[in-house]
Length: 275
Image 1 (cartoon, helix red, strand yellow):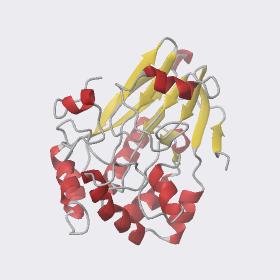
Image 2 (tube, one colour):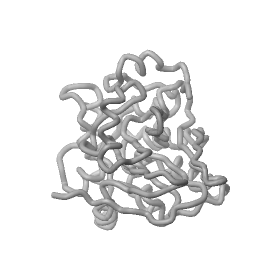
Image 3 (cartoon, helix red, strand yellow):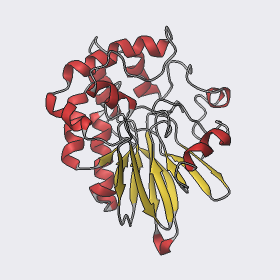
Image 4 (cartoon, helix red, strand yellow):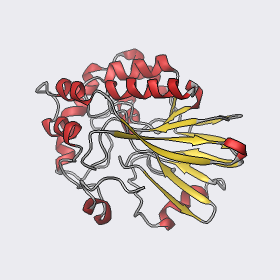
């Protein structure tokens, strides 16, 4: 089956980039306020997928996203949920702690989502492309060829470069790995804005997003942290149905484990994000 790709024509002005809402309604509400304060229109707000995930309010998060009218591609979670799959499709190693946790939060999300929300997920494209400040941009979740591929700052450029080669793209905006970073080689830029649903394993309860700017026709970008009502998010997650370890991460900013991380990123746990 061919990929569903949405092209946005004439994208100008500030662009808000974010990923991994992960059913964290409080973070999504706070980010929507940032967009309004910055004067960024909904069509200039783009999510890299996984609106649904580890936290307590999947249905409310999807419905607020719909009301906001922001753009999003389908993350692996949306793909699995809309297809009625038995697992989240995160490509966790069988028997790992992340795999075990997914056997709690994924069925919880399935049980909470309405038919209306699932129908909305079915409308999400696999990728979004747009031209911006003279650059050709593609939004992916993991990678172009694999929605669930984990790509980090330390991932070899030879792996990243395959995505640019799909159609001579200048910039890739990606999600899935949970960590904000940018990686530039010559005139090509890989930008992961981070996720807003969970901290970035940096020892801080704040979460991450990014803003593009095209002032004077030149592309620039900035990573930003988002402060939100993480105490309420934590409280709602302590419902005996979701992993308590994820609820604790909301507070501490430290992941329960680093199973998915390469050695470089694993070694930076709790030391803050270096951008």
